[in-house]
Amino acid sequence: MTSTAPPPGLARFNALEEHAARTALLEVCASAAWARQLLAARPYADPDALYAESDAALAGLTEADLAEAMAGHPPIGRPKPGDPTSAREQRGMAGADDGLRAEMLELNLAYQERFGHVFLICATGRTAEEMRDAVRERLGNPPEKEREIVRTELGKINRIRLARLVEEDRRP
Image 1: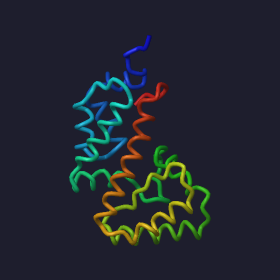
Image 2: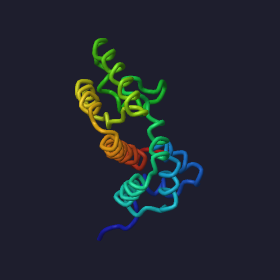
Image 3: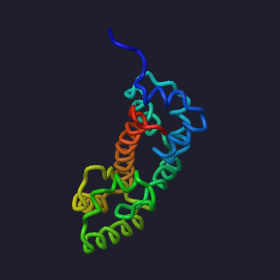
């Protein structure tokens, strides 16, 4: 017999007071529109329902909403000081030598100049070299293609962060 109750971490999230749930969601993704849509769909029966709602909300973000979401992400190679999530996600840059760090800074600046926002990539599990190669490659993209890549990468990041949010031993 299977239980219909959500996993304990998701049950905790479902039961959070709205302000606390909004705060937790904004730590996942800085888009207020995304967070509002996920809040409105609570409670979630299972993590897949939460991920599906996240994907739907992300797909519906306007350019302004997407810019708001990206503004919550620090440049690759410069995690937010004191932010364990940022440091964990960018762990691949931790062992990079000074030359690679300097190159990433230059590439990040070139990317921001070209596209008007931070280079966004799901850095979890990637090496510094992989991230460098990705920004090099993506610098040649037309803006429309790059916006779609950014949306895809943001979706990957959001799923990883949501999974951490609703893990059984994690309290938001």
